[in-house]
Image (spheres, rainbow, N blue to C red):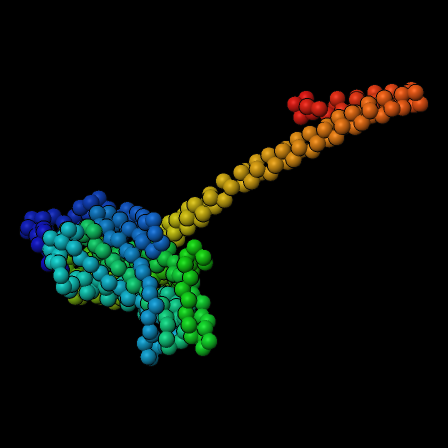
Length: 362
């Protein structure tokens, strides 16, 4: 990478190297300390932004149905694309990607595909005809050094939160594919077996001094760089040595041991952030359900009260009509059943008086 934004002078170079010999760095870190890592997620699934110190990288994942390769008819595809904007660094030129962009994409692609981190066979819909093609776009927002590690974490975070639409196969020939809307059927997450984490080392002098997570200024002074991609199980997925000073095998083994410790911390950080994001998204779906329950209960209560009031009014009306009928019968048979009807009429009147206007008395 051509460092056109900042070129160290002789004094600045000597100051950085002399500080490293004393196990000190310009930003105050120790030689094997990472900068502060922060992972942010967007509103849509499959988007993540990683902030590693002053370095910012955004990852975005999309998928579409395509025809598979002839030599692998039962496997989907995974592609990494990088975009270096002059806004992130004046050294980046718009248009055709440069050597740094190509190297960044190849290192991350090798760590993900060669280690089989993503299950490609689960992306197959119809063998030989339709498979899911997953695309990861990495946008460099600010170049503060160590773009490989930040872009690798952004790609993993975006893949962990990505959801692809669910498909069903039918039709007369059994080859017709139907892609269901996310509102009809819940989208499906990708099957990720492990998380390959990239850890970059920078070498100074004759390769005897090495630091982890180099900054932008340290990259301008370093004599060589090596990136080791390791998962939490300690498996080495890929190693990239980008020219510069030669490194002894004993130094490489020491770097791998240090990287395995750092990978465990970064892996737990990514998983915790993804779990928090997934729980928040699930909680948003649940919040819509309790709102309709009280309305349904209130409606039923009102209907019950209305039906009760109507029944009481009808009962009181019938009771009053019975009183009128009894009064007429008294006039016709007053000499025959005078005493008995008087008692019955008094009881009926007491019963009706209890029901008239009953709900208001409750």
